[in-house]
Image (cartoon, rainbow, N blue to C red; front, side, top):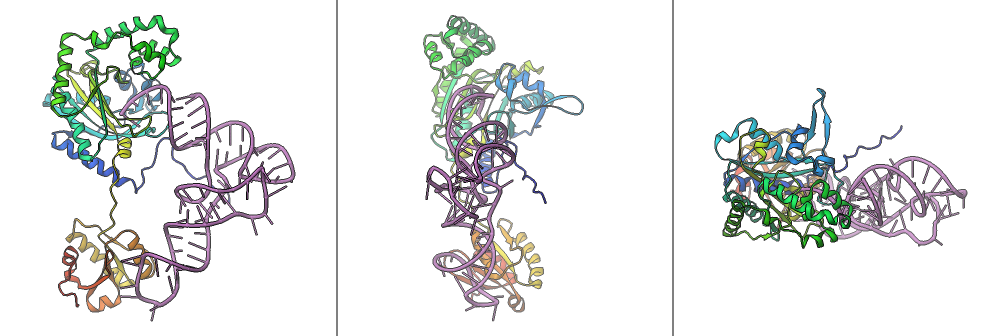
Length: 426
RNA sequence: GUGGACGUAGCUCAGUUGGUUAGAGUCCCGGAUUGUGGAUCCGGUUGUCGUGGGUUCAAAUCCCACCGUCCACCCCA
């Protein structure tokens, strides 16, 4: 008999095992609650969109669009893509359903994203983001709200040590103007740039600002700053953003070289990073995108959002201690087994908050107790022939001091809540 | 996509200059009074040595390719 080669997961698309899911659920629960109390509503978006949507949103000259998208043709011949980020789909949905007519829209989403990159720590091909988008607000109070919201989330998660960097890119026109300024400045030095940066100069000159290459950084020191290309409106907006973020009590560092990899950003951009993460240090980032909705064929509608990487957050938030069930119900013998199913149903009904599980399969009482103990269960509820005859149920305490009580069946739920029997002698 | 390190039991890892039948701990299962857990003791299963080729009398060990993981570049959440 030839042995089949065992199946294996697709590279970069990982299983999330039961020992990790409680940690994830905790983070998701906290995020949901922080969003809820700030007035955000959840939006659920498809994992698949027309490929053209991402090209138009993210920009043709970006790595995401150029080489990281999962592209495929469906049976109709439509060119589709697995979403590499969620803002594009969110904007599409706002336009398609005219959500802007319903007033201010504060939205949040969570789910998997797909990018065909080389996997490494904190970077996988299917990864998960939680994000927020707000539509219809052009004023700097929106920046303050969104930065405060992220800060509140770290707080609620007990996360410290994150660093916020923030910058402004100005309007689309100002950014375009600065692009030309940068081109003029760097062109004579083209030969001094490393190959990657020479390519950036041609395709996306702004990305030179956050280059790590030595020669490029040296040249940047004498490059005209982006701030010089800003008009009075953008300057006023930027200054107010900094005032309000300061007033919100959020610490930040202005980084004039911070640019984001997506083309749709205007005005404020920012990034929360952690020194504990290695090369993939960005935990959360985002910015304003005042022109995107209109560019995609919607109404003029300013907007801003951010997204966080759940895998990276999971790596930073300490994992809570996982607790075992409140009780394990152990039947001994065929008749007890049949009785215990009804008992279990009653207990689930009467103690809805508790985790009470059935001891499944064969095995001696000893073996079952051993198994129950290893799951961390606090009580064993034992039903055998003796108990059936006497009309009681044995409850054995598995934590702390040894203790065994016999409880009339009718009082079992009450006993499990209080932990003390009405009459311990029986 | 580029460069480097690594890949032995479910997990963490030993395995000498190539040399008999590949090991430890842990975990899991069973036992030490027929229905009573944790500690201890005893016993048991751990395995295509990542995969496929090659060199050799002989390969976990040396060579090549592929796959995967990790680190960095790149990119970004």
